[in-house]
Amino acid sequence: MDNKEKLRNQISDSAGNVLYTFSAHWNIVNRLKKIYFWIKVIQIALTALSTAGLIATISQGVTWLSWLSGFCSAGALFLNLYMLNFNPADDIKKHTDAANELWDVRESFKSLDVDFDDLDVAEIRERRDELNIKLGEIYKKYPGTDDRAFKKTQKRIKDYQFEQGESAKLLNIERKDLTSGEQGEEQ
Image (cartoon, rainbow, N blue to C red; front, side, top):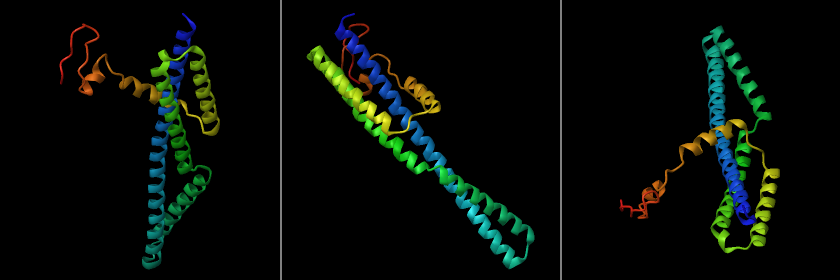
């Protein structure tokens, strides 16, 4: 294998890694949004129940409602204290920003792949090194991904792989059938 082919393989591997990391960040964002939504719903429910229990206790004198109100109030306090150390909105923003920056790098790798045959080895290495530096800055700046997001990414990417010629059919493009050598029919 010559140097240029080794470079192409390395760039393809790097682009694949960027795709996985990009997708994993979006999986984390989606997971955090669900968690954040349910925390807010529970906070509202606990606050409403404790307020209703307090009002009912005062107006009706029902003592068990005061206990219910107290437990709901304690639950809301616990959840609020938990939220002091866990800020999903901030984490959502960080992972979204990371994914957005990784998108730019991913597209740059795709462009490098398209231009690959027209460039000499020195220029390919220069562009590769620039992209690696940019990636390093992104990875240092943002939180990493986790195994759960990575495994979901692996599954989703496998689910979205196209068979040979399938993407062209979806895009309604007439192109030569690569497996049989015959002209494909327009959809």
